[in-house]
Length: 186
Image (cartoon, rainbow, N blue to C red):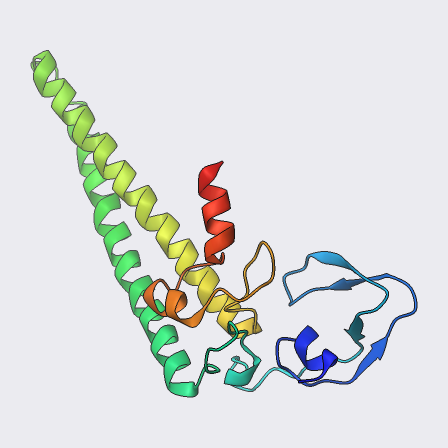
């Protein structure tokens, strides 16, 4: 594998060697990073396939892992889409439940403190579940966007590969194990 292929995660594209550091946008994330003088930087952008998803070989994998194939990517994509649909339905049901609980909360004029406390607990619990589902929906949609723009599989923190096994077990992952452990220690 050439330096150009290593720098682009195994992708081959026309590149030039820079004499001095220059800013480049990395992986379509919109973040600008400084390129060291000895690294080659891309001068061409890769075309987006008509389906909106990149070729399987464009997705970064850890050393020793097989590249993503069409079936694996399709399975991940379909799982994320299915999860997103389920979460949207769950959110709709939860929002209706919250509306009912809020509507019923005004009718508690004769309730004792225990009844009021129970209603408050139920409402807060339902709101917590709804917020959790919204967060998971956002993560699923973000993973689908990353699949579409070719950045799926790259750690958002350090840029290294997240790992196929981790992504197949948890397709919404955006950090490699090392960065996730570092984040959890904070």
